[in-house]
Length: 530
Image (tube, rainbow, N blue to C red; front, top):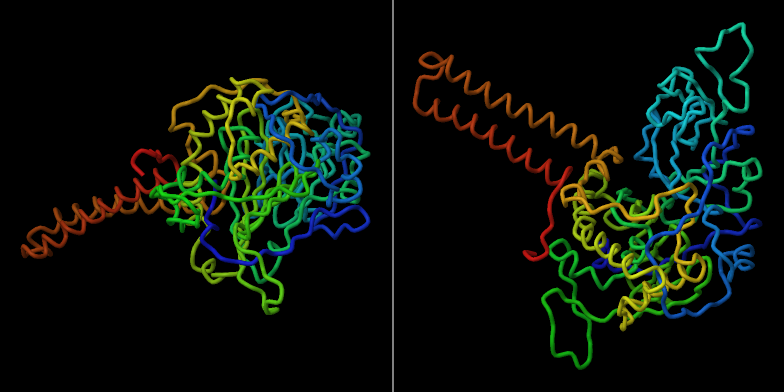
């Protein structure tokens, strides 16, 4: 899907894997304490994903992910015993709550000024189940429900009920007035949460941590973050990211032309430059797998969310100790609900670092969103074709004869073997895919990205203000010409200059309006004309 890195040479970095308990590194923030005996109004049920996967068995070797994972290697994957990313911290406004859906569970993230940490709660006020994500942070730094004004501290305990008499019984101290508070942590500048709020899981960080990419925290690197909600499911998102062969075709016109690799015996070449992609699957187990790619890089899948690596050559032994140029792709794939997913990306690099000082983040997002747009419709329909084929018939329905599909097959093996081709939803979900909307809604950018991105939101606000200013300027110039005719503007040349200025301002406003629509709201991608 996203392959900006295919043109950047670099050496393969050595990345640590998630750490076992006794070797765990310090996290950016401590685990959150669960609220005391909160009322859990939402039952947790695991419903099936409508998309299936059955593929040839990938080799299984001892897990490199730590002792606990080794013991469960052949067992069922526990979707609720995992950390899930919510958003890059740079896209979270500390002055407001942020609602997200993960695993079918509606949660709200907010910044607790009392301890300078992010909190994650159930997105429902215990009073009447109104969404807390529509609330505000009050003057005391508490999360306030704006339906009736109930206020909650960082533990989820209710601190104030305006309707309760001050001299009456302390009803706000009742356990039913509490909100479930989930363990959460900031790691690699991304907010993660653990989807169990029970007391026994309050210290989960001592046992299990989110994946960690050291390059992201390396001061010699810069990292571009982004997030986008997508109208297709988690498993389709993951397998699409694991499929480099689609890049020159699905994203034609968006990427630089790829250099053709040698393929002995080939007599037919296409203009897109596609060719064989050799990849070998290693270390396949319940925790994920590693894919080595024919001396041109590697990728690792850390179940269930993290997929990272580089398609660039490895660092050869004996090279100089000076750190070579590096560029990485890091994706977090979040299951939202059936037929919906979210991708959070982070692209750390130590080359062209100075560019980030002059190029704003929203400018990168224009190209990255275009890449996502270019295969949204394909994947949305593909998911429905998978569902029609049946949950047990993925391998029979598809034809995957080349090594280019090895990562996809490895993921489908993992999904079938350890998850029974189902996402373990944390809350009840509708068990069928939503209907296919028109392309302008399917590929819309505002709610799926811009509204969640502080950089793009700020750029959009500025551009809209500039558009209005240009329109006002064009009208003002014409008005000036009418008023000043025969006095200040006396010559033909002066009148022509004033008219030209008015036309230029109007044309600039129209161009800016078109730019805003295409890059912040909707732009169709027609493959036939690329």
